[in-house]
Amino acid sequence: MEALADWVAGELGDLPGPLVMVGHSLGGGVALELALSHPHLVTGLVLLATGARLPVPAHALERVRVDFPAECERVVRASWHDGPPELLGRGVAAMQSLGQATLTADYTAAAAFDARGRLDEVGVPALVVCGAEDPLTPVWLGEELARGLPLAQMAIIPGTAHVPQLEEPAAVDLLLAAYLARLELTLGEDPGAG
Image (cartoon, rainbow, N blue to C red; front, side):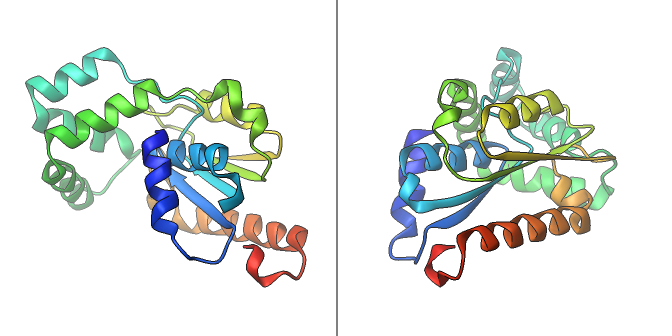
């Protein structure tokens, strides 16, 4: 996760900031690590379907090795509470196109990540958003994350799983708009501050 956060920091280059980092699932771990290891770059965090740790069962890694296509299908289907078949099919195809090595690396990075002991170091406001029916990053992981962050608010989106931003985009958009408006008010008039 540290290497991913360092890569993101390098890619930000000369963008004016600090910035609000938005991350979903593993990307939420990267955004959180970025706030910890490069705090000068981050004004706020929006953390979707993620946690301060991202447990991956050992049998999931074994499934990637033994039957990669089936594991891709399992993950995509688990990501939606009630996903349209065409989107599920596109999601499975997209995940398979990334390859077995990528999914193995993602699972390995997630399983090794645990920022619980450092959450009190995050000095920026955070919005934690969870899908009420998420089996991959259950609500309790979001609650644990929100409790540990000094300046966090949490929202649980009913009727969604691991991709609340796709299942209920209007609700997530409203939450983000309210969070960003509140953050802008707290930052004042400085246009380079967010």
